[in-house]
Structures are given as C-alpha cells and as structure tokens.
Image (tube, rainbow, N blue to C red; front, side):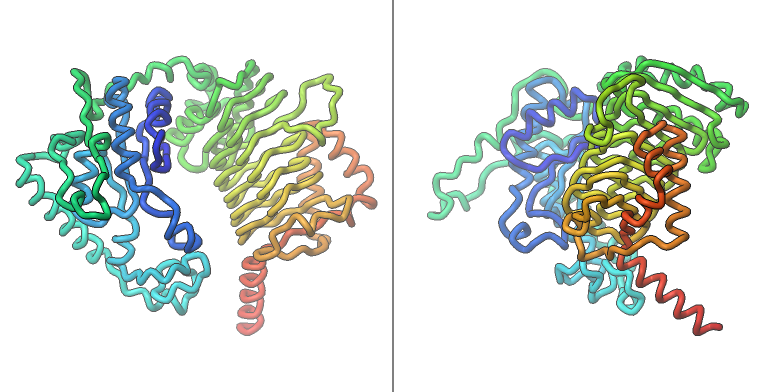
Length: 482
C-alpha cells in the first residue's frame, strides 16, 4: 500500500498516521502542480519543494519511533544524481522520476498530453503521430546510468559505501554561500536540516507489525471457503459486517486467483451474505466466482478493481425510508473495475464508476462526476445524477432515467453525446434491471419494469464521442472492404 501526500508544511503528522495505519510506503510529492496536462497556472504556481515535506516527514516519523515501520518515497522534479543524494540525506528510501525519462524518450514538453496531439508520438493514440516516436529503452537506461554514476561520485566524496548508509544523514548537508546573496539573506534552513537525536531506527528496518491481518474478516472467510478454493464446491456464508471490516473479500479473491488463475471460479461458487455496514473497498479486486450480498450499506471504493465478482447492496429488511433519496454506497464505487456486476438499491456518492472499463452496474442515483474517465462497461442509473457527468468518458455506455428532463444540464458535453435508446439498448437495460430486482428486490426497479412503456422513453443514452468515432471508422472500413 503506497499513500501519496502533497509536500507541504504539516504533512509529517499525516505521514505518522499512515505509518500507524500499516501502509508499506508513504510518498511525498512536490515540485509543481501535476502532469503535462495540468493547467499552466498549476505548473507555474502550485506545488511546494519536496524537500520541505520530506524533511518534516522524516523528523516526525523518527521522533515518534515510526520510521522503522515504513518506507519513504519522494518525487517531483528529480533529474540528477545530486537530487537523489539530497533526497536520501533528507530521509527518502525511494526516488521517483517521470519527466526526465520522458525527455530521454523524446518528449519536448509541449504540454498537450491530454489532447491526443503529442507531436513526438508519446502521449497519443493517433497512429500517424505514433509513427514519429523515436524513443528506445536504451535511451532511458543510459540516462539512469548517468544518474547513478553522478550519485556514486557524490557518495564517494561523502564517504558512503551504500545508499542505505546515507538515508536520514542530514548532518552531511549544509547551506551553501547562496544564502549570503541579498535575495536569500535571512533564510534559515536549520529546521529542514535538523537531525533528531534518538536511539531507535531512522530508516525502514521492517519492524511494521502485521499481526492485525490475523484478525481480519477475510481470515475467517478463507477458512469457511476452503472447500470452494480447493475443490470448487459451492459455499454459502452468512456473517455480520462492520465499517471497520475493510477490503472484505480481497484476500479471499487473491487466494482464488492464485489457485485458479484469472478465470477464477464458476459463477456464484462462493456466496457471501453480510448484514451491517461494510467498510471501505468492499470486494476490491475480487475475481469471478465470488458473489457478495450486503443488507445495509457500504463505504467508499466498493468494487474497486472488480474483476469478475458480483456485488449487491440493499436496504435492511423492514426499512421505511425511500432508498432513492438515501445514500447506500460511498464515493468512487467501481473505481477501475474491469468486469463483474454491481447492484445498489439506493444512491451512491461521487465519482461512481470512475475509470470503469468493463463492469456492469445499476444504481438509483449518483453524485457529481459520475462515469468519469470510463472506458468500458455499462451503467444504468434510475435517478438523479450530480454535475459533470461523463467527464473524460471515452468508452462504455450509461443509461440515465431522466424523469425531470434536466439531465442534459448535468452532463459534461465535451466527451459524450446524448441519444435515445435503440431496441438493442432497451434489451441491455431491461436485462440489467431484472438482475437488479433479482438481487436487491428494488421497488424502483420493479416499478420501472412494470411500467416500461412509460419509463422507457425517459431513458437517455450517454454515448462517448471517442467510441462513436471508433465504431464509425470500423464500419466505414468494413464497408470499404466489402
């Protein structure tokens, strides 16, 4: 688990919490405001030096005897061996490079990474532009050889034999004469270069306590589901669940993938039925063969990276509230899902199905940024959406029940078109609605199915422009070949 933090004053206390939370790595990212597709104002005026956040992180972790538990990584504008040496002396174990290797591959910093018009063929899918790409792996390897050579020379001057010996040795850093310049006179770097005087680890020594994993819900699931994993026998499990039970199903799914490969198990081999409030990342990365039912609600990242499993979340039996007006799942549901199904008898939070590339889902309302950056899969929404729907969407389809006729005003029109459903679309939506009713007993789905002649025309099909162009191009090529 790698947690990324923006370099700023006060980041150290957050890093301490991350170490206590048993992450493997904390990344302190600084320099400028993001990627080559960032706004120019962000690139010029946002971001703080990684040195500030890294120095504070190292000091806070060391002072609280947390440094030995976690690796510290830094990135943001690293280009030379000297940069690596400074980062190591300030406390970093690992060092991230991105822009410099891109330049070694031929990048000329045109800042059009998001427009598909990269003139040197790196950040584009245009076959004509990709022909211009002249980069070679050897170019990047040679660049890193020179970085390592410069670092080796600096290490020799400082008397270090290994990089590990350098980590946290801020006593080997000092401010140079530039601080005497009239523009920088008065700057005091003593806080950044402070080295806590402690008798415990100042580097990662692998002392993180992983015993917490011995008591997670998945360990119980592994024992109960052993017949399914080992012999493919059907297994059904009924258990309570609480919001402290996070990533439920992930370890189980990992064991299934190890035993049976990417295909997983046959559908519904393992049925997990929970009552309560599921913690974050329910069913994350779960493969085929796992079906998860929750009677209650689920938190953020439900179905993250879903790769074949099925998830349903329904309101508790006997509930009197209207599911269509209440949140049943948190933010960023189905983030990066590649396959599988998910059904939610209620409203989900923001960024529903962000970067979905193959899963099918039915939900009864979503927050802002629904289907953001979606590249595949099918989403049916039986209620209101938030703003900026379909931003960056380049594939897959979404079908939204627009009873009030205000959905067009909530869509980001730059990447998607809105159309009426075809008979083929209706078959897809009806099939998913029947599945939704089967798993959640949703009154909303039942009502829409019973009154399809009335509700059907109110569905709006969200059709990504990139996908439409690709389909039209394929059709033209097929006609031409014919």
